[in-house]
Length: 270
Length: 324
Image (cartoon, rainbow over all chains, first blue to last red; front, side, top):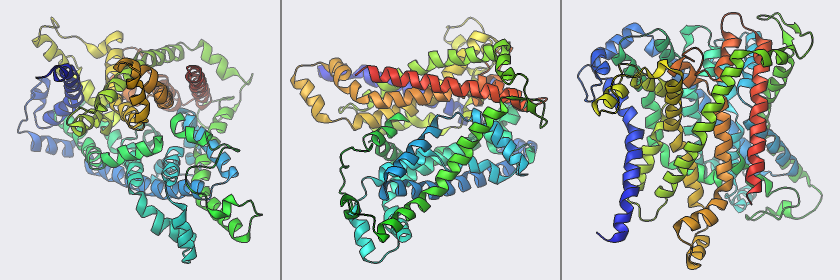
């Protein structure tokens, strides 16, 4: 080994250490989902054969499928609506750029600095007055338009050539068609990044659903997990299985789209 | 969000035209034609749904909360406080508010710097040209971000239980003599929360730093090397100044996030022992929705959080500017 190669060993060791620390809690979660409660307490670190029994216990004791359904509906509706609203807004801020629109964007960006804590109570009161407590509508509305996503799409639109738009206009295409048929198909990495961010946020969101979904019949998966904890569940195997089930979709989405996510973030920072 | 916003500033009125070619209609300074006016209108219709919604779910409630914070009463029966600032006066006498606020600041002051430094070191390692298996390292270190806050809080709760994995491993390796009640003592329980935050968010910040590092102009690094600067000097004097906007962004976002932290406090320690790990947002939740809700006082707490977030962001922006 040359001297430069030797000097790189600490770097590899440090990275390996970071990877072990990052992955280990997840490994423990996955392994524990296959073990009995006693084995979890005994810190067994090898996969066991109790997965199906844990699943049976979980389904028998918790409304898992109802919560799964609510979480899926919330996350998918939020993601689809957010992508539509924010992509078209970001496109408009850039392509139909004007000073007035820049001012509007600057004001909207201030919203990023408003803590959710400061808006939570009036939002709850608003939806309560409208009789929308426990509704899907109330869960998703505060999440679908965010200045961050608009910014992401605006930055991405910056590299989109204006000549193409002019050419499409000469061909007689309407403004909406230009957006939907010419612009959107070129925005796949940005759509993926925005989609991942929104889906993960909505799927994992805890505080707002907990506030607005007063009736536990409408609970989402994170609420179900939290209630299992509060109920002092003593079957740790099925508890870890529940955590695993909640985490699997987000990990899959993340692993499939992480390249696009990194590209999208890079695009936004440029 | 200062880094993504930064480009907004270089487009301020009077700034030179942007890199991409301007459309003909805009560069010619002719009075707006009917077509141009219609296009501008189309632009507004495209952005108004999102803009209106942002105003409705952010700005409007924020103003409502201000009015609410000047009212007292339980549940829905509210009346103007006498004197108007009564709720704010109460904040200063509230022991639990003071405790939860200082706990939140302990998390902030210990966790955010460690996390940002770690993320910076990792990002630089991942950006090294000689590193192999880059994708693997990046994915593995970023992976905790794919896990929900409630999920990881429960896993950490399990690991740091008295009969949990941490105690078993540490006693096995002879680091501890006997099991420690991690979540039952103030100091260790706060430490577990900080460890959890580090675990969950370091990779997230690393991705931002990595993206910024990859955007750095290579020629500036070459120039530094030609001038004889070593690795550290190049990083400190050439790379760091170019990373400043993104460091500022991550610092502000992390500060903001820590001050609003709820899920970990609620699910990992449930605020215990004796409210000493409770964050101020967790306390806000309890005042708002536990037992008999006191929305007026809760709104005052939420405004305290809002003001502190704003002050800290202003300080960070100021300090970030000075280092030029």
